[in-house]
Length: 349
Image 1 (cartoon, rainbow, N blue to C red):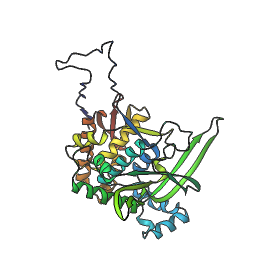
Image 2: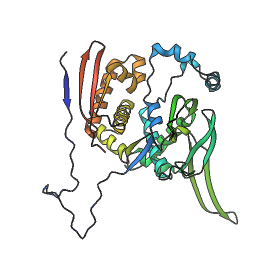
Image 3: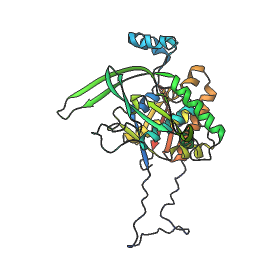
């Protein structure tokens, strides 16, 4: 089979140019305009769990390895153990909400002093819960339905329908539980390495309601109603050392590159896969087609919908190219099957 190489369109850069295309040099009397893109951090462990793939032939081995308390938690959640998949499986719409929560969590937290107790704890206090067999912090943020929905639309005008859609997705995220299994690795200054295995079956968020009403002589003077979002500890775990920096306007860019606000989960997952590679300073990522499909759209793989799977994969690639995150890619044939080779734009931000 002949290698297929598809080159991305060059990313247009207009910052620092005048209308004729001439570079504008800052004058000594003026402060240079910063071109640094504002970013927010998302915990690498959270991204890893969303990209986790599980092959069906590993299913029994996976079930046998679950802890008894995990199996009990699954049954208490009215699900059969055999139905549960490892990792965080989201739809495109729910992934957008999680992206928005991650951004607001960063913006509403103290993010500069890792050794302080309030580091990445949100703006509404926090709770201490048992997670991975030990007490840990679960961050909490307060937000209004409008600001969350404004992020969801990529800054576009918010409608009543948008508010209802986001509220519904938020409620669903608060009731759906996910099986997260991973190993946290901590390297100490004395050279010691600590590995801690985590296995939890929990929702990503919980939503305790909150409102504040001020009245005098039984007359309501003001009322403030906000949504409190209690985050799963995975949003915060090891975020000081293992994180991925996302541009603040990433959702807006994705909606524009996608040509529609309805972005498929495969497109989000490829974006995260490439950005994780970028964060690790990888210029090239290689992955076999079967594994790529399991990572991008596991539900389509399970349903055997190959035509839709190939279409979703190509759309994800096209959007990544338009974003400028993916420079080039090619597909090669080997004795183990078709392999995708992705070339990541190292200067992308």
